[in-house]
Length: 85
Image (cartoon, rainbow, N blue to C red):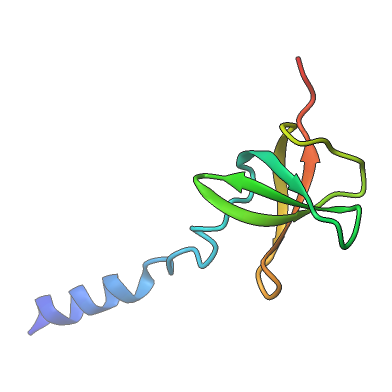
């Protein structure tokens, strides 16, 4: 009985899984297209997935970008151009 109680307490103290594990924050991607509806929205490919991206700076098709944040309600990734080093 004591072993079961110890195990349950141990499991309860574990940290919950990160809810944002699958979001591409911090991942690199590439601009696929520029959306015509608004000049600041782009279609990007990150980790094999296609996302809608938003950037205040002008980007071109083929530019390398990094995802800085994600609006998980609207599924829009905030992106910025990767500086060439």
